[in-house]
Image (cartoon, rainbow, N blue to C red; front, side):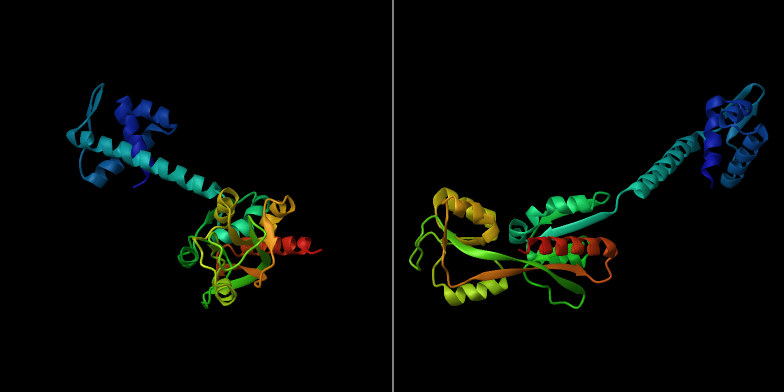
Length: 281
């Protein structure tokens, strides 16, 4: 049933006159009468008592009026909702593991915002398992990880690297230190770390910034991104320690194949390539 029929029914009920209802709706009185007749035939009942100089609703009309208001209101709301949806920006969601965020993406977030100025950009920090699940259910477009996802449904693009340095609040480090902080730098790091270090950590974290804050406030040692600790080493607040593990960690941009936002993914990829080129000496 066309909502214009219900609007006409409401106009007649409010004005108690077919002519005035026609004027309100900017249609002919004949059109008003035809719509009311259509509605009465649809419900198989009379909706108005037509008496000389007295037009009023029948009990059936009284029962219908509230529903008529509701139907017209809901239809208008649905049209508004669809109109807003049509004008909404495309959403594009990126997630990074805590350490990829600290070591790489946090310094590039402004570049990403400038790149996606007409896009509703969403970012989050999460663990690898959650990122993979969200990529799989398509609530996430891109994940930034240190290790690729080995699954045929995913594409893994190597977009960059960052170096890790062993730093501490003291210049000397050995296996007997009691304030070593083990930062989770991924699967490859764990293997190399276990091979070269026998030190027992007194604290573990997945976030480089947490490790840095602990070292700066309480003292200690940890492998941290070279770029992150550069200023602290230059100001002698931290000491860079020669270590058997000289690690360059890879960063992978991971996304599901046949992603609907393929164009935005390619633009993000181009941004990371540009950043990598500009970093070269």
